Length: 142
Image 1 (tube, one colour):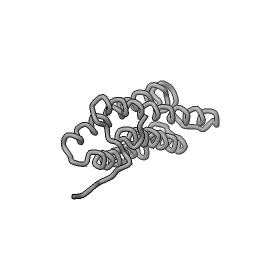
Image 2 (cartoon, helix red, strand yellow):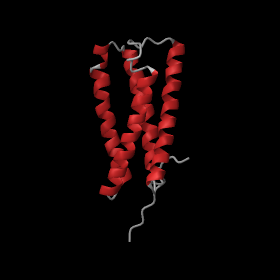
Image 3 (tube, one colour):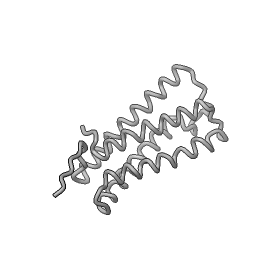
Image 4 (tube, one colour):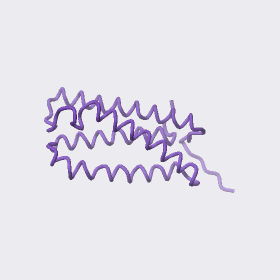
């Protein structure tokens, strides 16, 4: 008999997964908006501005909520389809994170985002990914 111990407590129901994902989204939004405020106070030139800017409120809210929904759905599918959903979810999340860096590094400059703006966008991606993964797999629970 093999005994496996873990520090994470995986979601036990759909409601638990939804609650944990919502907490992850809220923490992610807090990190991203705090970063945006600091960047604004420091006067960092991000490049593009206006409502369509990736630094505007609506795109930040929308993309973070969509990321949370995607994370919850992906975890639910992995929970049903695999024996180790948390591990597989972390691997999937790492792959998605790497894929999301491609447009930040390749297409953002064409849209007018400065190198400092690219660093801020990368930080935004980290500040969304880490809390979402941590809350969804149960490494952090509230």
